[in-house]
Every structure is written in C-alpha cells, then in structure tokens.
Amino acid sequence: MRYAGELFRAFGENLREQKLASNRTTPIGAGANGVVYASDIPGNLMKQTQRDESIFERSLENEVNMQAIAAELGIAPKVAGLEKFQGGIGNRIEMEDIRDNFELRGDTNTFPTGMDAVRVNQQLGQLALKGVRLEDRHNGNVMYNKMTGRPMQIDFGIAGKLNNDSEKAAYLTHVTAEGFSAAGIPEMGHILRATVMDYLEGGDVAEGLDIAKQGFSRLQKIKQVA
Image 1 (tube, rainbow, N blue to C red):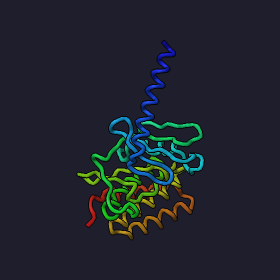
Image 2 (cartoon, rainbow, N blue to C red; image 1 turned 90 degrees about the vertical axis):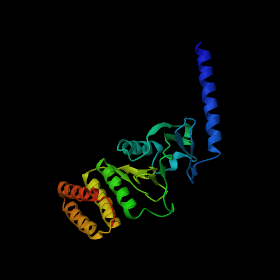
Image 3 (cartoon, one colour; image 1 turned 135 degrees about the horizontal axis):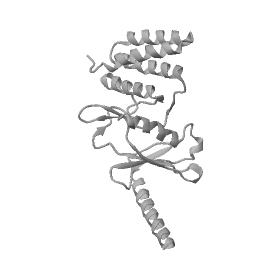
Image 4 (cartoon, rainbow, N blue to C red; image 1 turned 60 degrees about the vertical axis):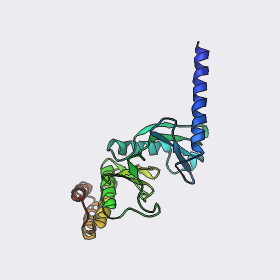
C-alpha cells in the first residue's frame, strides 16, 4: 500500500508539472531572469526563475520573506509557497493573482506620478517601519485597485532588510521626501532630509528616527493632490 501511495503521489506531481509547463508557454509576463504564468490552482500565479539563482544578488527566499511582510500589511499579493529545485534553476514562488481587481497604469518604463506616487511612498514608508527596503518602483511593479486606486506592490526582487535604526531613519526619510515632492511640496522633503541627516551624522540616531517618523506621519495625512 505504501508503494501504491508513492506511485499515486508521483503521478499527481507529474500531472501538475505538465499543467504548469503548459501554462508557462503562455506567460503573463517574462523578463531576462524569470517568467510569470498561471498556477494550476485557480486564483494563483507562479513566478519562476529561468537561470541559476546563485548568480542573483538576492534569492527567491529573500523575495518571499519581504513580500510576506508586505502582504501582512495588505499592500502585496499573499504568498502561497516557495518551491526550490536542485541547482537553483527553476525555483518558483506561488502567489495570489490580483489581476481581477488591480491593474497597471501608464508606461511600465516610467514611474508613478501625482497621487499615485504619494500613495506608493506612503506604502514604502509603512514597509520601512517594518524594516523593509523596497526599490524598483516603476509602473511595471505597482498595480492599482480598479475602483479605489489603492496601490499593490508586486515584484520584491529588489528588496532587503534595513539592518538598524540609522538605515530605517534614512530610508523612511527618503520615501517621505519623495512623497512630499509628488504632492507638490518638495520644500518639506528638503527640510526633512537635512534635519534627519544632521542628527544621523551627529550620532543621534534615536532623534533622527523620531523626526523621520514625524515627517512620515504628515505624509500619511495627504489624501489628494491639488
């Protein structure tokens, strides 16, 4: 019976791989390092590497960990799982497919502007407070709710941990200043950057982080751009 059970399991795995291979022939998106396609589970999709993962600066496991933090905040698709293969080739993430309710905006080679950019930086600030630095926020890596315009962050390939309060203060200040600039009040960002950097360079990290948080609190209050 045990042998029969192993056969059934292997048969099921083979059927799944055939289905995924078929879905991979009609990808949702593809790049130099990976491909995104429908999962065999309705409502999910797969992101799979096409090259040896050891050559990447960051692993898919790191990407999953960073995305999971954002998903807990409700600003990224939920991660369903991570599968690794021998040699690191073909490693893949399974995640929630949000395309029914979210859409891309603008040219994917450009960056969000106006209120879209304010909202994106508000979310990047939330992640900074959780110790996550998320970059590469061009229009191909942000989707928006079709009804409310709320952003959803996708592709955590260029993301990592902020290792200490100094890094957290600096990055929180950066995204807050970018948000102020998008809102049409860049002078607030200039003042915030200069003030926080003065404290950090002087070794008063706690005060620098507190001021960065105060600045971010003001950014979070912006609900529309004039």
